[in-house]
Length: 379
Image (cartoon, rainbow, N blue to C red; front, side, top):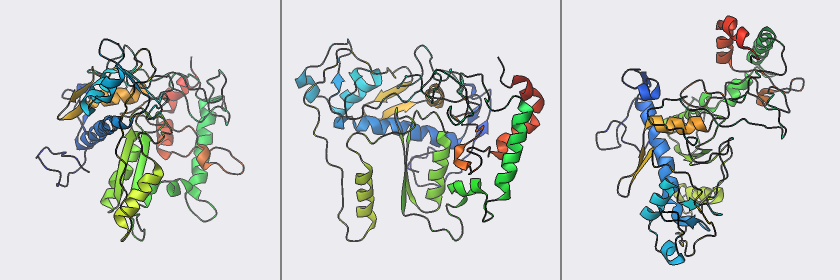
């Protein structure tokens, strides 16, 4: 995996990945710890470190001194990687065209926990999620319809605009899952077909030589654990699998800082195909003139992200969880953002534009019918 998860000074060991629970010993993460979450944190730290390491490719950024005054062109040209990293961690910048990602959070906060909310000691779910999501372009927060999105915003109190009662929704859920599990015209469970974990490393399945997973670190619609599990499965199956949780990237992150999909494909082609030309990324020219910003707009991460010019960046598991929570567009029932799936258009059909599909969510709905019925579409 590229990390020293057991702390023995090397990265050559096979480590069993575990999630354990001890509320007294790990109160800052609601009791959760273990080597799997150590890996999660290591990947998160690496995503920020990778972003910082590429700041030399930034263009048209405006950089500032700690007192808020603008750097001169000569000072910008003389900035070292450590200088840019320090400025970024403290928010002393205005983004330019390269790496100038828009807000990854529905609420507009693109840097971390919302203003005034500290991750220090705050366990997962300890911060409020981002602002309400409006997919229709209007002002409604109704959900569960083709025009309004598939699941509830974290701030919405409408569970469904399609069903008058919980019992009616539960019946539809049960019927949809029964239909899905009965199989399509070829006898296949379409949800199982959609899950690559059912095929990676499976007998009779040829794995790819390499795979790359690119997701926004502030993606608010799906758990980072999903992509992490894919990478683990691929690596265990012998595939060269890289994962990038792009810092501040949202639901559909774009390539930044001189990177491109074409460059990555060419690089991997050169690495694995005999006789192919070896492709490497062009070195950064470096920014020689400051941008036109007048005051810093970057997010100050220094109260929960540590930076050392020699050892790089560091953060706590609770800090990473708080960053993820503040980017959640959906309700957050667990350690990381999870779309709990009222219904999904992916599994629709000619007669139903969306179907319920998650058997585990159905189990919760059935086991807690009494409590949930009282909460359905509540005030």
